[in-house]
Image (cartoon, rainbow, N blue to C red):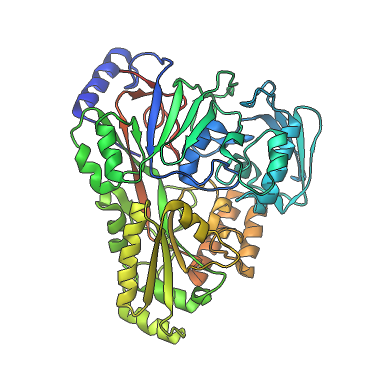
Length: 527
């Protein structure tokens, strides 16, 4: 990650370090105040079992928790679990729960809540299928212990149980049992986190308040894991679709944190001593166009290779993220520096930028001018800009392109319609996952619906293997298959830009590491 601090802050940091050997954060943590975070749009739900939405995770990570949580190195650590044990066969796991953990309705969390929540997630959750296809038994074995039995070992078990995106968050039993496959109403998103839901006024704000009875983990604070303290009285997440409005708002002290700022607006805060610029380059996000592999013209792999051949990735990434400070070309799903990075992925196809060759390949693949239906959300400014450039490049290669622009909620509705998907390319971005088994495009139920026998065989083997070396080799084979079948178009690696008022101390982007979504526990306001 890269920091750009005003000179006055750098000098202050040097002085403080020399005098006291401390970090830049001056003073002691203090309670009080309202943290105002400007986000790009209203999420469609706060029920994280039912969505992988990053905007939804901004408030939801403060409300709900899982049995495990990722630390700053994306290693699963116990969160609602106190400890766990796995038998020698690798098929029976026992999770011992922390005692005295309270839900926001005042009820103590017990094994029956965990069993009910995991069963709901296993049946309906967005990322449950890979693990749940191996679960043959789940039961409470006492008030504070849960036993999960598998039909065969599943190496990334705790990774799945730590992932909050479409993940196994824990609700009260009565909430989980009644919900079924429908997303929870906001007032029913009752978790165990340091903040509780208060109010959602669509288009205005989502309001959370400190849960005074929160019971923190005893582990050291690190990323999403460990001890959490809610210093702010309230957190207010405010949808501000216009990026320029988010920048103006943080300059005017209307917001304390402004998320997802287009890189071309970075210069507007240059030299402002009240604003900290946070450029998250490790881990990056991945701008990707999903491909409809279920029906339509993109079920033709030869045509997909023709389409990819037309794309100039430099122009596409520059359109979305501007200056090269904020992006890099990379055909591997994972970025360099991440242990799953695959050198040599996409050779001969990625960034070919050859419209003439693409046209002849499309003709050979049987293309007859059918429209390539591209969908994008208007509030995803970077993705919209990329879609416009892709449209131009495909048209130059002889493709007919139908670009459809939606608001965020409508985009997800159209994109996720598995019964009759009316699109060919869907533009979005994805976070770095701690394990390749969590890459969403590998799931046959995720939008894009990559469900060939080859990928399912690879995925099954990936999840059985325990040694990293074996799993890495298998992941390399999956990347080879990716560029044969092209389930999605990865454009490159992008580095998110967030802005934060200097008065916010101690939390995300300062003392504690960047993660996929900002978090505001362990942070406080210091005038």
